[in-house]
Length: 277
Image (cartoon, rainbow, N blue to C red; front, side, top):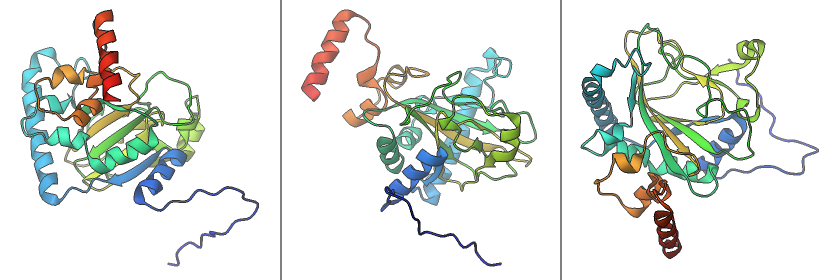
């Protein structure tokens, strides 16, 4: 089969974007389509460690909160903030992946923080509680010229058409309203990605989990990075208090942007920020 012949020349064009690095290529995809797939750079041994630690934390989490009836409150198939439950720092370093943060820093102008980290499981041949179209900034119907928040879904397993890989409505991060059923049927796109990849979405892009038709769960770790003006889903500074963190790590986890408990604390924080600058 012959490959498609795609013209690269143009006319009547005054301005053209240029990319010279992988990060710039992915940033262009993110801006135009609303998503991209980014390699994490982890080797096979690291990926195996992440997989094993995920299952360990999942079991630990479900035992700890079994009396809350997670399924009844629609919190099943989710592990909230796994970096708060670990001892090996695997999920802490996952949230601080160098390549990912380079992309986030170029997409979100100015400061950004980790707003949330959640382990998610798409169960085999069952109803999936993320299987409906949504934005990761729910109930918001505005658009912005630059991303205010990014979703970085780390694939612990391969994301395939068969195991319910993420579906997106390309370009919907630039539209205020949820598209019509006709548009959805004609334009929904299902992303496939290899184990160890990050699927990065503009949080205003409408997306949905697919149906897992295999016999194995499809696992991932979702990260949401936002400008500091959005409050964290769960206070990360309070959840990881006591862990040894660098100043850079503290900033990504939101320590300098935590809500002051009083006017005095606010004024003191202003002095600290001035000294840091």
